[in-house]
Image (cartoon, helix red, strand yellow):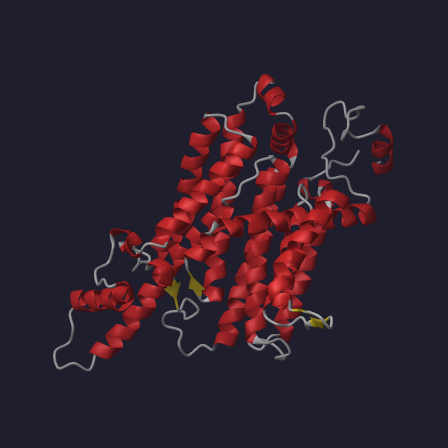
Length: 414
């Protein structure tokens, strides 16, 4: 009997990575920076940002679809990752500009004078000139890259530990995650938060020291990085939800009390999943906002996390590829409708303008999917490929319970 491996047991991984590789190659060939120029630089950035949103949607699916934790705060981790890398980008870029402007002075400026001038340049918009303590590592690329992982990870760890040890579940946990996100966004709106309040961080698309490199090439670099991050994240989470760990977290989703009765420390599993997905969300944000060029507290508002849950629901929760497809399709449609790409529909007495009606369409789609197709877009692939989202049992194998593998299914696989 042939021994099954991780990849052979999860054929969807191969097909997803193959589709991602083909998509990346096609966009590269058609891009302005590295190909024929059929795809504009702005659209390449849109596609790169979409890949980042697909990554955070996959993370959300592991939390909600597999573990049963409806988190309405994961976009907070996404935004924090963007802020961490944005601090370095803004500092380094401003430092170069200030140094060049002061170079012509009769007396060369000291490093402290340059540092003070950078602070005035960055924080003058909020009436300040000194760097807050949270900018202590802003001049170091590697330190800020570490903070991209540490800041969202520590927040997720602390919040998760406090919530899970108190055994807060269900809608109450969802409300707590939403409250955390709201509190963070309200704090960041303040000018004395140290992150320029409502102005946020801007000019992030300009990489320090690479002024001679056109944006068309920079955009394709970020697109490649986003594709690589999505592939790595998909593999990581596919491994997490497979095997024994996957069985335990699905058991927590279906019947937490029974899993605890079997001797598993439920809180540890939930905390691991919550923290890991928060870290990956932060990494996705660190790739997203340099392509967007700006980040402000609106990006962390609770509505962003609600949109994330809608994407996962439309794509099909409990299926990693469904979450990724849902985020990709909905975010691209959102860009098309809200940017004026969709033509208005005149009805005589009223004209439907999609820039105003897109959110209504999204809400109707969410309700329709919830009521009529709870498996979402991913359910279509299940039907076409006759796949079973529930992992096969490794011991005993078959059973009469709902979701258990039947004997006939096992015979078909042989």
